[in-house]
Figure 1: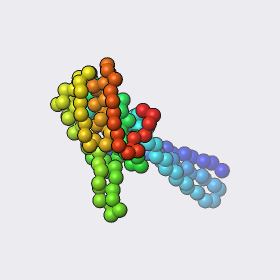
Figure 2 (figure 1 turned 45 degrees about the vertical axis):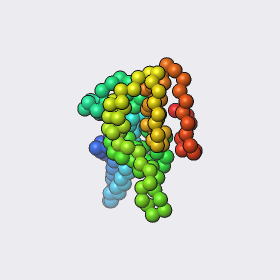
Figure 3 (figure 1 turned 90 degrees about the vertical axis):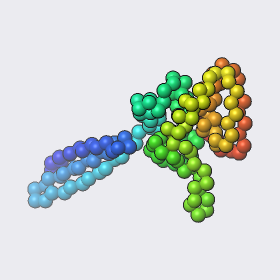
Length: 164
């Protein structure tokens, strides 16, 4: 009995690596084949890094402070239950839907958030009032504005996960 293995790797546009392993077993009178596909999904840190690199590369992110904030704040913690590839895509993320599947809460596309932060030109020590962001944009502002002084963040409801 002889086994022959063929590995085929393909990277999708999203960055996900698809690996297909084809195993051929040659017997004296017959041939059996088996195929196994493995999907290797990048980590949240890899996806976040790729997103920031793309936005810095195309000029969406300009300032070091905004780039640092995007690298530091884990977007996926503000979109529980949403697949990582969706969370770190350059698109709006639906965070919550009503009982009919209608979106009632979304997270803005990363480009919009980066442009707002760049245009606001927030600096350490500035006082900033952020209303209605659901926490994610407030986390960016905290990263940019609160490096020197203590900041106070008030959140209503159990929306945020700790640990970042």
